[in-house]
Length: 155
Image 1 (cartoon, rainbow, N blue to C red):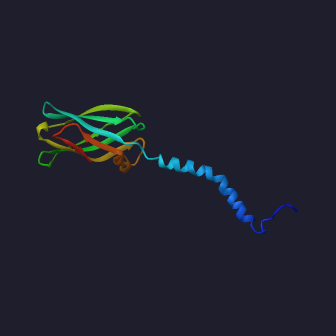
Image 2 (tube, rainbow, N blue to C red; image 1 turned 90 degrees about the horizontal axis):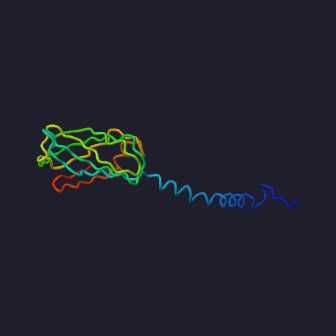
Image 3 (cartoon, rainbow, N blue to C red; image 1 turned 120 degrees about the vertical axis):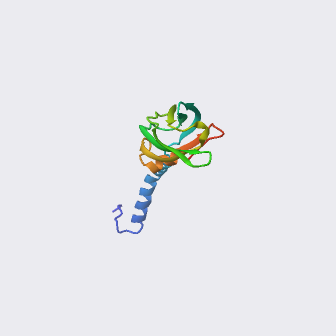
């Protein structure tokens, strides 16, 4: 007779409030996990260019100091000449990129004189296997930069 039943006034409301009070501490944990789920940026810098026979050799610095391992990261690059005209297309694999690591990768643009370079365009991500598997998400987490005053690196 000291027990309340489900059809007494106030029983349902007090039960709902008790359940909510029990779940409240976990709501902050779920929100914190959601906000930290976006992958850390990968910074790719055009660091240097030099003549290599009939080609122009490019040095790319890949800075993954803040991120997770990328097993594969294949990029679609275009070299644009000083007039902004697409001069050469190149698909390059910059992976694997270990977590919390900085690397330098070299790629040759065959048949292209370095003096004609005006800009390198990161046109697209062809393959992506790492912190995110979506090509669109990979492209969005890549930050581009250039150490060369006369040649920019953009996406």
